[in-house]
Length: 145
Ligand SMILES: [Cu+2]
Image 1: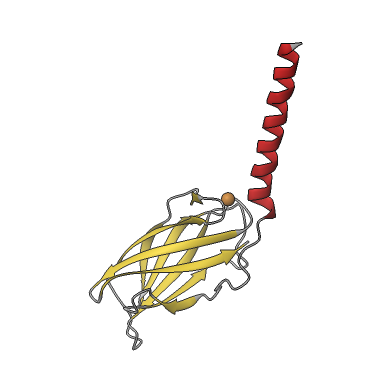
Image 2: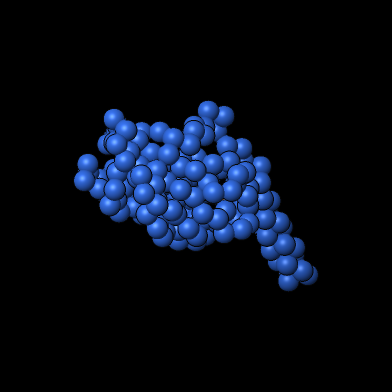
């Protein structure tokens, strides 16, 4: 009988854990005031940045690409930038499932970023660390799938 009770307690704990996990992943709503704009100044204002997914609307599942356009605040294209990509789901505490990278410079301050994948619905952040002649800066875009 002791074993049976232990098994029941274990099952109950697993059920509570699963319910908590499900609540965290499926019931949490993105913040109401989330900035979903696709163009904005970088955090320190060194760059004007625009982020354009190649296929709209952005989908959950497939690998996809986007174009990041960098300009100075007065509108001159920024060439020769080194850009790294990070991000994740702030409400889930995990990062990106892939490691997106800049694969091509397209001219006029436009950089192609490949290898982006969103494997869950919800609020995602895409963070770009930018290093070019104006200096080091970063920008974060929000997406809700
Ligand atoms: Cu998630």
